[in-house]
Image 1 (spheres, one colour):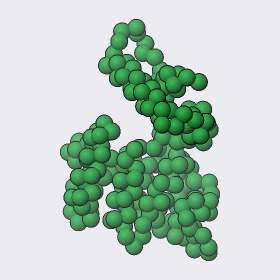
Image 2 (cartoon, one colour):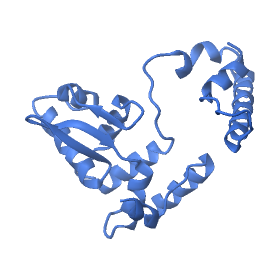
Image 3 (cartoon, rainbow, N blue to C red):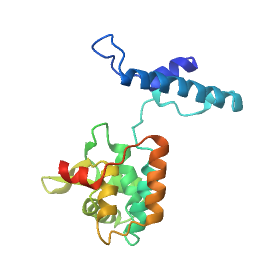
Length: 200
């Protein structure tokens, strides 16, 4: 597959209903060119890269994750030093299909993949899940006797804004500056606290 085809596949979406060019079409075309240029630069440095890297467009077992996840995990760890649920949060994202929702069918497997082993592994996982729920990163629904039957992962950008605006949340100015700076570089739109309150 050529670089241009790979670039088109990466940004492929449903075609508009009309033939009229839209702002979305122009942005997609621009992004296709940027990705092709990016891949060309990569291949200058690593000519065999195409055979050696992970290509989600041609592989199974991938999920879309926000680029800000590392910073989100950092703030989770910083504000929860005694019960750090950051790895649990990342593991939840890897189980979630598009739509932010999934059903928990094996707590033991979730606990193990999050790094917990031994007799208390599931108990520790559940404690971290409650922490994520209390912080607002997830919402949960029971299923029979299971506390964590279904999981909804809330938009982490909204949650981080909520945490920043809350008193005594533990979110530092240094982290917030890094967060909004990274968001600007990647084009992520961070909602204001007032916008979030209006939607709730």
